[in-house]
Length: 137
Image (cartoon, rainbow, N blue to C red):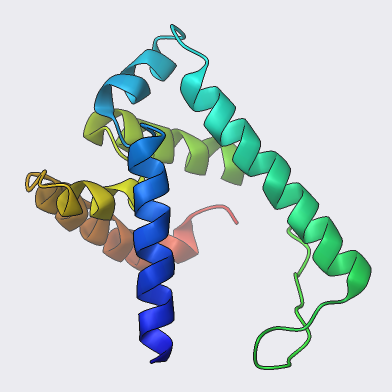
């Protein structure tokens, strides 16, 4: 029953991303060509909502569904990790035409070639695990 809740939230999230055209390769292409504000508006809205939600969680000391206090640890301040990580993420996003969430949504909409991208993402995750000690954190 608990998994059904997560499945329903995932399906709803997928419908929102499809209807907002956030999973459209053409919208992503427009974004990387600086031809449209569409994706920047979606990403900017997500950042603003995320900042507000984290501020609210920290300010009101909310608990999780299980009743445990929600703790958000501070991040180390390191520019290299964000530049390297962001560049690799952006390069993969630009090459594949999808970031991790939309990969599964695109499979659900019938874009079966995304299975190759998911395989590449799994391989990249494995390589990160192998090289983790050698990367800046």
